[in-house]
Amino acid sequence: METILQRFAKLFAELNYEDLPQETVHQAKLLTIDLLGVSIAGLRMDFPSTMIGYLKGLGGIEEATLLGAGRKVPAIHAALGNGVCGHALDMDDGYRFGGVHTGVALIPAAVAFAEARQSDGRTLLKSIILGFEIVNRLSKAMNPSHLNRGFHTTGTLGVFGAAAACGVIAGLSEPELVSALGIAGLQGAGLLEVLHDGAMVKPIHPGKACMAGILSVELAKRGSRGPSTVLEGPKGVFKAMADAVSAEALFEDFGRHFLINDQYVKFHAACRHIHPVIDGVLSLMAEKHLRFDNLSAIEIATYPVAISFCGGHPFPPTAEAAKFSLCYSTAMAAYFGDVHEQRYCQEVIGNPEIGRLASKVSIKADEKWARLYPDRRGATVTLQTRNGEVHSVEVPLAKGEPENRGSQSEIISKFRRNAGGLSDGIVGGLLETLLSLEKRNVSHLSEMLRHVIL
Image 1 (cartoon, rainbow, N blue to C red):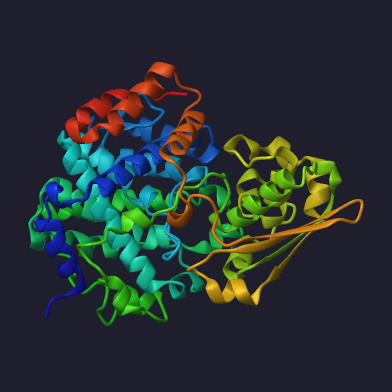
Image 2 (image 1 turned 90 degrees about the vertical axis):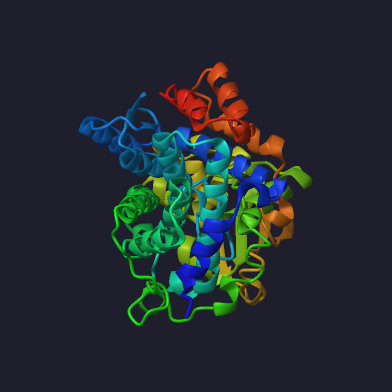
């Protein structure tokens, strides 16, 4: 009987670049641009800086570019370091039906591995699309149970995407792909306890997923055999990490609809569960011509998962914790009129005016939004003013979801803002290279990445 990994591997081994819809290829380019920008901005943060410094000091064979280091390191180290950079800002893409940040768990691995093998851009793009395919399908099937058990899907299931992408780049046979995916499944890890303490190191989850993907492929290439039943087996991922798995979600429209098309892009540097609230606050303030000083209180009604992730820390001790605080991020949005990456710094966390309004933010679970989740990740936002006015708005989906997409120009504007420390020539060169990646060798991208030093 065909195992789940064998079915995925069959498509991955047989699919040609020419079989991919052009809109899907273009989506892969935009998500790679988006993640690279987020990664560049992430270099300014403490944990990525620590990781880059450590990896740079290790030395080793020069295979792939480590962002911020201005040099090449072993591909497995570049994947780890660049994966950490991509998640530090918490502004990377995601898939709402799976509760997962897909791109950061596999794109750094694919780029590093393709760079080491001097692959062409078409192979890299195909590998990214197929990596998204397995991660999103598995995460949709296993959630919300997987998340409710305390697992961070980006780390636990991201390994499959990294292994799939690198396996495609390596040209593995179908049996070799099955082994690589099986070996990857043994390494998936990530606990959401990091949301309650130690948020700074949360990016280690996708970094390790990227690293494990490359390791799995290298071992499979050398004849190591992984368990083909690592998902559905009696002691596999499904049994160990979920109370319920939706088997029908695994292969619905498989090979016809590519789930990378359903990815969201973030336009605020906070946990995604906060975004509908931020959108609601900003839209109401603009529509009603309200200033921060006008506000006396804010009421939030949303789905329970948003509260479990972000309902604590009304006065977060660190910038990283503030990204997971509904109260503080909402007050910050009202204060600044945006929630860009530079807002999350220690100086802002100590701002007494923002703290005052954060103390007046109330949160409650709403039956309607609970029932609609995850089809809709919504919130009802109510602003109370000092003169007694009350204004409310419902936001069913935050900006950036496939039903409420950001435009290419908005994604590129986000990239330029995140890459603001680089010269205009480097920023323009990266955009030109990535938007025409199917016509280039990955070495062209490698040459541009070498200049990413802040």
